[in-house]
Amino acid sequence: MLKFRSMRAESSDATGTRSASRDDDRITRVGRIIRKTSIDELPQLFNVLLGDMSLVGPRPHALGSLAGDQLFWQVDETYWLRHQLKPGITGLAQVRGHRGATLERVDLVARLQSDMEYIHRWDIWRDIVILANTLKVVLHRNAF
Image (cartoon, rainbow, N blue to C red; front, side):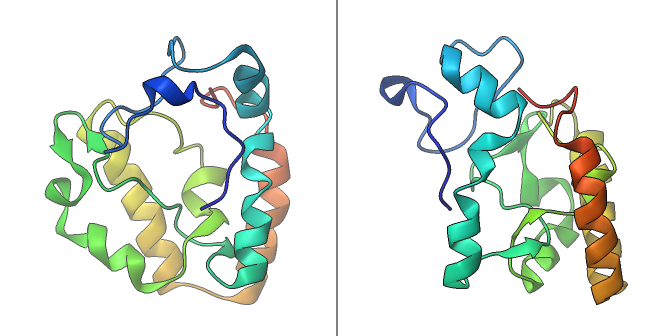
């Protein structure tokens, strides 16, 4: 997944166990701006053109991502079901405000519920609505 670098390379987290936080010391000054405005996501359009991602779908996560102190797939067995579709640049969970750090299990469960609803009720018109609603949440309080 392509993204603009917003964090210092020397302090990267290869396993993905540390989610970005509002006061994260790894984020550069320019990185704060591009993350806050979601500009760091623009290179993912190349992933869409290459067929590796969709515009709309469940957002991809690092394998080591944690919800509280548990790996995502340990929180809920439906986690792997979200991989039925290609990952998306945006999704139902994002337009509902379920983005940012997953400090507690409930943060991930809310995302999973939205992802599963999206998968079970997919239709092209809903994708269009999600894309339109994405424009409303690009600048979001949980973007950091």
